Image 1 (cartoon, rainbow, N blue to C red):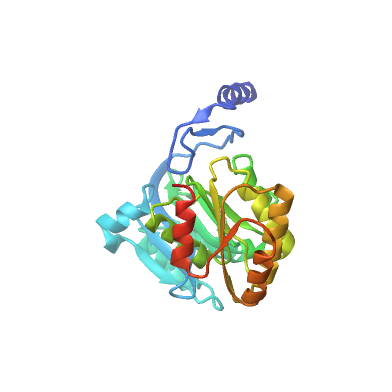
Image 2: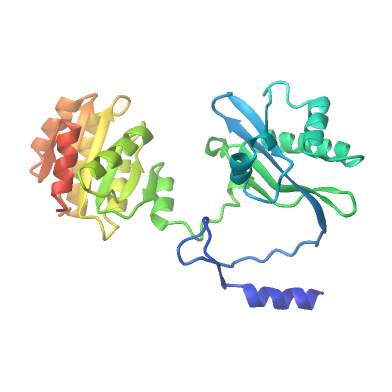
Length: 323
């Protein structure tokens, strides 16, 4: 068996798996091969525990129709999808878990088994600071054993300080190097396919900035959120990351200075432009805290910077730079 497993691993290692919704256009290379005990499945159900913003806590989503996309089940037979809110302080009781196991249409001794697994999954959800634990299928073998056959777990990024062992397992082999570089400086960067680089503070403003660029006929090259505690060095790092993209033909900085000091941003922009000898067109909109001092800095820098107050005009100017 060991020889068979080794041969199987050699055959698959570094081969590319087919393209799915979760892979890049060219597919993904095989870097690890998992060997697991084969089990015969006689029943498939669906079980997930997620954080629900509307409820303000965990919600269990379950259906007796597992092994397929839950979205399809919800669209075709919504009455077969059960949603059970869980009080974060009380957890899920034995009675509630038994009731859920019956709703999943387990029978006989499998009911208590399934209920026990449900309670363990909820404990796991809390213990690892998960935002989602999805088991599909949550099923039954021909030996009447309840098994979590396949699962996906998402973790709360804010829990990294106490879930170090879990986050150390992250596979970054297929991540964009620029995204990893940005994360090291507490910047949120996602590459896109346009040619106007965006440097913004706050996810909401970043989305609005990308939208208004598209409204004027342009295409954003990235999502880059510098956050609310950004310092001058981070602005410089952001510019370094933005200019690594050969597709970028202009840079649009859109900052609302609520928590962020616009003068800090302006100083970082000037420093970054000087250190990188930036030649790309640069449009800057700074509004809010210390914005007058920031404007003065930009104006006296001697750099070719288009400083524009109104968002619509600034976005239009950024798009004109690449037309």
